[in-house]
Image 1: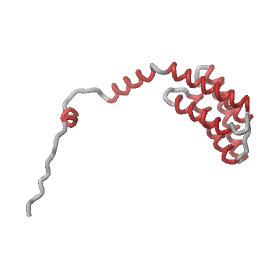
Image 2 (image 1 turned 45 degrees about the vertical axis):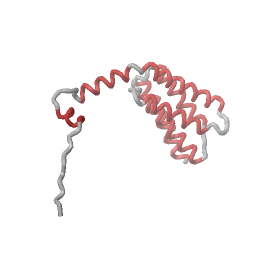
Image 3 (image 1 turned 90 degrees about the horizontal axis):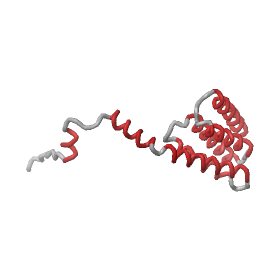
Image 4 (image 1 turned 180 degrees about the vertical axis):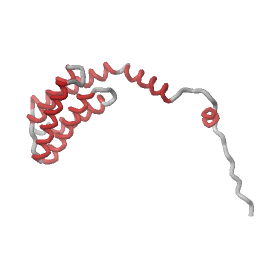
Length: 152
């Protein structure tokens, strides 16, 4: 019977990783954030367009358009989540939460959705800054979300 031998193969990548030098994690993160920041204006334009779409869905309030609310709100979160949009992200998350609850229960409330969308427009217009006004808006949205939880 022959004895098994173990061979260690050193790949090119392993050799390169073993060499000193390269970039630190902090430097890589900084460079990634700089590159991401270059897209902020385009992303915020997309976010504003999504809020406009939500406003149009709310104005129509057509039966059967309820799933569009969750789809658009979650799309907004997916896009805005790459940047510090603070209160806008919180308002979008709250809208997703109530839309999901209302859709599941069948007890849809367009005024609850409209309040969220109007708050999102105000926050977006204000530059997504966390201040006393946006905190007051978010407190109101939390109240609306609490009422929607009680209704389901």
